[in-house]
Image: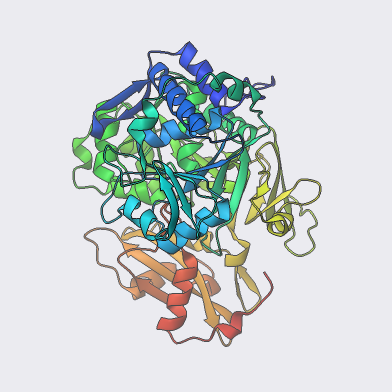
Length: 559
């Protein structure tokens, strides 16, 4: 195992604009951003020049330090430029989920006080420009690039990616055509590492999304240690099929690469298994990112064996547990022998623990690794908040450089998750091991209590994934009038495989405790997910209650 530096990381005290400037100076001609499907390839020097021009344009438009600039787009080159340009001029980037519909978009713009909105090209059925215009029909004043709306009073500027923006919009071409502003250097030097740089909204799988405020230091320190765990250098080429709007894409992807000078290879606007395999082969990628379902989809692609993936060495899998069969397939069939597992959450910038590239497979499937340097981890009893002994289950709490500055305009919500002495409560239940690694056993709100027995869904999910016909599985607690809760399993069968509920129960009998065997087994074509691949278990619970005509009153308990 490669030990971490005891010296202060070189990024500490810098901003994202500073880091890009330095990387462009050290590796000017190396690939920075590659979109193979677009035939686009920028060096670090070229990316830096584009960031200067767009940053200057935003200054000339009147964007002030601390103002909120939103970007609503699929993965695109303009997303990367916007990220660094906004950081360079001391403004705040607001990531907006491209899957949002009108109500969600309007709520986000209001909640985050977005003053400038950059809108991406249409994608499939989403006409982003048209959708924005539909929520601001009562414009009270308009000129090129400047709107005034009674419904969104803070929103002043609209910028469309593309050459033909709608009336009243500026185009991205206008931004990139700007001369370098004399104000740029001042703004860059005045921006501090402690300033909020990014507002990322939580996924909203269990409640309303909240805007986590992340500083330059939050994100850069996280990026430095993430890259260290996978052993990145300027020679690495990182395939990033995960969305940029999410921390997986814009921290583990674009920011980590900017710290190490590694190339960012983006296969498509959104995840596409074949496009990802093509990008790995054509660009000789050394690293691959994704949530487990993305790896399953690639491995199951009918053309998988025709691709040369021999360049792969490492990468990061995160978002949900990785079962042993999948890890073996990623290591041996894809060739990513040093793939790592990361665990974290948006509020922690995001990584808290991560395995090392040379950890044995047992560690990479049995744990989520150890705490990255500079953060402390402790496990506490969910009720008493007392620290639990090693080996016992407790809620994982973290303190250190990754903990967010708080939720935007939500001090009460912030106080609920961050203690006065700086501990962030994750809501995840975990167990610690003697070797310093941690195992996540479930969400505190997803813990199933059946007749007094605590059941952790990931344990059952991992076991069921060993069935040769099971591709994916989600275990959810449903109300039960006798035991309080019963186990339900929602299963996606492997392509070409026939699977029945009785097959699953037979597979469990005599192998796992009787109270863990699912009472309800549903074979489904797919699992409901967020854009980032997280399973929306609350929807499965709601579906199960309705489908099996259950009463939710039986499981009312304190989380």
